[in-house]
Length: 85
Image (cartoon, rainbow, N blue to C red; front, side, top):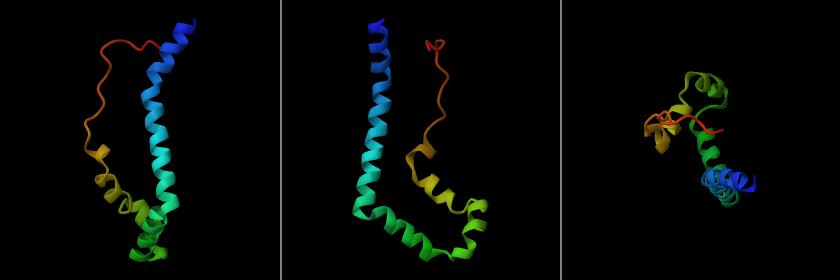
């Protein structure tokens, strides 16, 4: 039983390390003022009365989604074997 628990933890560890790294990066950006600066630039770039209209039009989300590498990654493939969940 303990070996099964250990193997599941070993399988999940890469994903957990990625999530922890992203959390540390976001925390660092927040403390250094990078995220507040980007929000300030965004508020200066558009008028606040247009935020809701632009959000529904997808104009705010499109540039950020194209800038991230995950928008250019291929679709995930189906696993070759059935899930051992």
